[in-house]
Amino acid sequence: AAPLRCRRDAEIVCWHLRLAPVAALLAWRLRRPFRVFLHGVEAWNALSPRVRGALARADFFGANSVHTLGRFRAAHPRFAAVPGRVFPLGLSSELDDSVAGQLPPELGGRPFLLSVTRLAETYKGEETLLRAFARVRARHPQLALVLVGSGPGLPRLRKTAEALDLGGSVLFAGGVSDADLSALYRACLAFALLSEGEGFGLVFVEAMARGKPCLATDADAAREVVRNGEDGLIVPPRNAEAAATALLRLVGDPPQAARLGAGARRAVEERFLPSHFRARMAAFMGIGGAAQGER
Image (cartoon, rainbow, N blue to C red; front, side, top):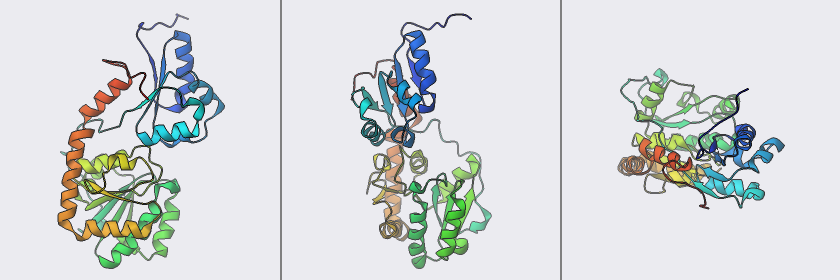
């Protein structure tokens, strides 16, 4: 086999912890520095022995949020002394809303709130959202809630919606096309995700890019994306009453919702455009200047 070769200034970059053993082996074979990007729950959950061993060779950790980097270091203190830096995510490409997507016909023109997530982990907060929505619907019976996403938690959430007597006001849309998702973002009154385990929360950025106010919790990295009172509202996790109060503010006060939505769009233009994302990722990879040494 031909020997492995690379540029003298090359570094090995690992974008997911599952690939760390392969990246570490490659870095060892090539005698090159090795840096790892941390994304979310996989960074602070238990690590396999192979991944732990691979990370012991890492020279630098990048992370998508202060929350992710902090939880990683707290969960795995042996790596706390390794240099690291936060590189927030952003839109990876310009929004293309030129293709007209379709709203679910079941909406029938009703105003609606939107949530987009994988329906699997309980930390995503969808049960809390359903309980909060039940309180909001008592004041706004014409309002609907659209949940986009699939996963093994769907039967459990359907049962919760039935127990709350939400009937046809909750639409479990499953997976949708990019065009249809764009249409949902554009048409919704507000976006809500009450998770307590987001490593970043790119769905917030996607909603904010369409000028939509967002509701998030103060338990994870969402508070680094959504600024309370500026482009959305922040509430404690697992608190349906607080979430309902916040949603009522967004639904019942259109001028405030419009102000927050305008702030959300400005936030994307100032912090989360594709150009911002590319520059941060180039910095992480050491293109045009090393990121090493920052903590």
